[in-house]
Image 1 (tube, rainbow, N blue to C red):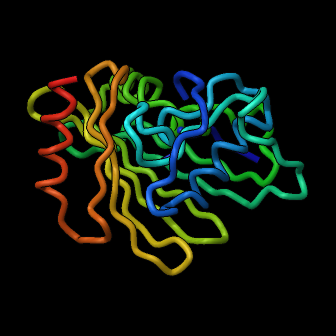
Image 2 (cartoon, rainbow, N blue to C red):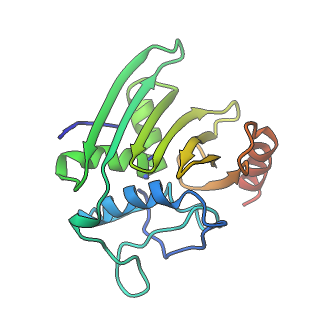
Image 3 (spheres, rainbow, N blue to C red):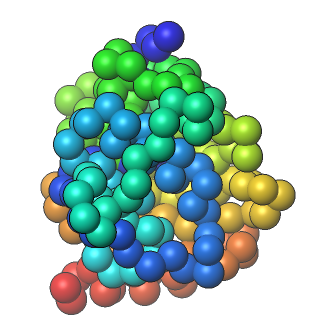
Length: 204
């Protein structure tokens, strides 16, 4: 089913947060629920906005948490990730496909679910960035993980879900412990949004 992998999400379980205008939940929750369905413990750094709003946060269960779905509710997910070095040479390629995830899919889910895991994997292989494409029945998202000049990381997600173009992401500390959400509201460019998020992250 899976040849090991790397938008998309897991650091610390959190409570369910607010959705921003109902955006981009389809793909994110598909992956997050896949993680939860395996009882993988932590489930959502990348779907959470680090507690600052934005993409919904996910709980690992319990009262007030996300209600887990059965296999019949799972949607197919396919993810491919390429880690590249400073010369833009691919140093590690990972990919997996699942409907009901199995244990061998967890490296994929963890990479795309946890900035700390993703950043550590990139650096472990001598890379400076990673490019991920995640596809579901509802659309396709391209997620880029790149290190900024100040040592922080930029996670940028672009794609179309349910026919709607989306462009959003996060700026994270070098260790991935803290992230600040930003949303371009469908615009092609997001420089001002990214700078504002970086400023907020420095002041947190």
